[in-house]
Length: 270
Image (tube, rainbow, N blue to C red; front, side, top):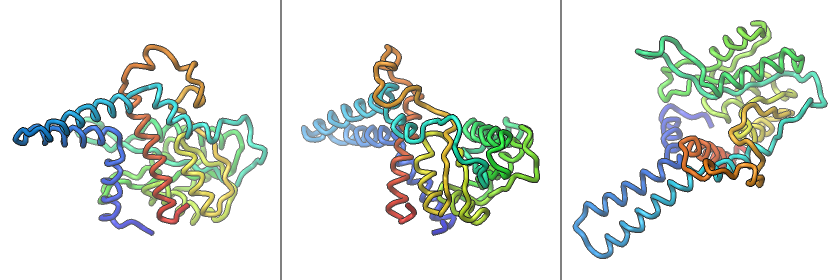
């Protein structure tokens, strides 16, 4: 199902509810509301419960030790492998990871670090002879379609890395991973592809591309977690026990990927 601007706006808004920091804000808002009402024993009891729940949730989502285990479970699904057996493939497909628009301070449109890293990995695979085509996919992810086109900037970056212009195919319409898969299928049909994305994103992305009929070889590009899940002793330091804002970001990524896969199954896309 193609999302209209209204439905796409709802989709993007709903994602914010999944963000762990949103849980803290919701709990804090409810607790503050209870404290602002006329005091009663019941309200005070619930306010105390809300305060404890807020603190517990914040400590949980900001723990580097827990977040690395959580996101590591996703990143370990497709571990980095030396050399895929089949070569060459029909195409290398690189999924966009975000774009930064120009503004009053930023002078030009730029790729996020995720997009730049993924495009660099894809260009490297092309230059090493994995396929004769490089597909970059990512459109305008703004609600009203007034933002920059991600695939255009990805192509420019690939060109700068030495990939010839005439071997790069662009999908400039996709706004999410499901649309990446369907739009790429219109370009390549049932091809054998190397799918390049962040390690945490690949389980969901590979499943969506396989559902479209692709023969997929996933290649992880970029890890948040240093060690495999279960290797707690390797990460057990004092700083891993202290709250960190990077851990909140990693927890958010893991939650969004997990809930995203559930949503796709619910919609019949997986």
